[in-house]
Amino acid sequence: MYLAEVSQILIRNVNYEIPSIKKQIQKLEQIQADFEKREADHKKSENAARSEFNSLCKQLGIPGKQIKQELSEKVKELPEIYEKIAKKIKSLEKVVEFYCGFVNYTLGRQYDDGCVPMIQYIVDKGNTTTYEWIYGEAPLSVSEPPLNISLDNDDLEKKKVEDIDNVGIDFGEIDINGGINFGDVNLEAGGEIDWGDGNVEEAVLGDIDYNISLEESGIVVEAAGHEGGIATGTEAYTVLDNPSTRNDFINQLFELEAFLKLRLYEFKGDDSINFLSFSQLQDSSCIVQNSTLENNQNMLDNVQVVLSEILDTKVQHLHNIKHSARYVDVLTSSLKQKLSLVDKMIALQKSVREKREKCAQEVTTVRPLLQLLIQRTKELQVEIEKDISKKYKNRVVHLTGGINML
Image (cartoon, rainbow, N blue to C red):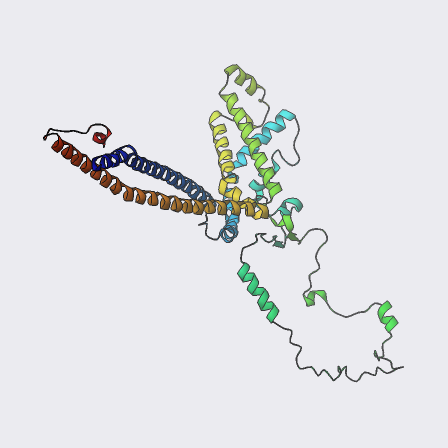
């Protein structure tokens, strides 16, 4: 009976218990591998989001800690940037002269305001206010619209409101039961106010001579028109900063670039086409007749340098930040979303790592149990073989089958 019972235990261990534990370990190891893969994917997403955040912050030139505050401070760099661009625009003087000479000759008439008036104006005057561009004279003062960026300082604003609420109006010492002392004025019925000996009607209808000289008083009478005016609103922006004039300037730069590229194509084209083209320009201005492939290429390079400066990613971001509160909100939201994604990926990595470690711990716990079960099963095999051998005059007995594959 004991042999039958031990054999049953042996068979159950070999056929069910040991394979079940092995499958459990394999499943845990597979889950652990899946968790490792998911953790690596989350880490990859975290690095991608962080890289995008750092890249955008680098383009904007901000650390990215207090985004709106940093953006509002960064916008202050725009005047210096536009001043550098305006200096480079001076190099387009020959380009404008060449283009206008070519257009005026081919069309047979002169443009009153020039072919590319905005570029010509900046070459001559620099990056002036839009007021001066419109009216032809500099304003006495410039009142630029305030930067429309709402900073997230809720605690500060709340404190300000509380401070204002706690401050009362000091009317001094007032006797509530007493009246207001107006002096010796008779306000009884029939009483009249003495306005002096002057005739009120004459004073109102006549001319009053105060005998005051405007020059001595320091009052300046402004001339008619816009002379000495104040530049406000969009007129206070510089021509490179004002969205409308800036767009005109960029469009005219593209116009010059397209023209010079076409001229280069003609220079590099068929000789017969070049001869026909240049023979038609014999009566044009000297700058048009003397144009060569080399100076044409130099002019194109100058135009493209200015284009790359004005269309620089950082400059465009700062320009949009200054003139669009909505753009600031979208940009800030985008940056915060990337930071939020980084935090989310870090949290997911932590969660997956904990699950992976839990699986590894379970494997560590189950594996010794498997080894112990295999060991006990081997011992049962040996004991059964010995016992059966004794019953058959110590003949050698071997149990074969799945037990030898453990």
